[in-house]
Image 1 (tube, rainbow, N blue to C red):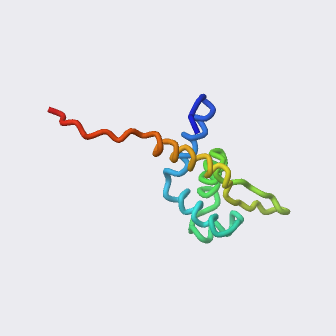
Image 2 (tube, rainbow, N blue to C red):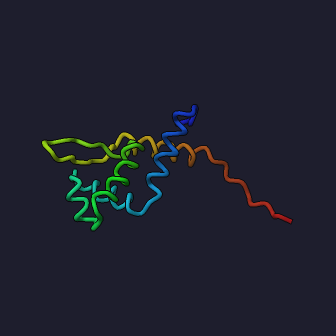
Length: 106
């Protein structure tokens, strides 16, 4: 995946930003196992709903999670297509990176 325009760059940056927080990584780890509602996430993470909502918003804006409303509850799950996008981005870097010998900085 070549980052060819500002939209691609914005998506990649938002994803890396979203993944740069330990609480958000914990949310991602919990959602790997199953879809969870906000109340379950609060219980597992021992955080209040307002703090959790901020982090869920960041993950949602980055496209890493998706909400599903069922009655009055909102359930969250991973957006695997977005993770595949980041995986492809990192794979492209690894494949195209030139490994050069280290230069002395004299």
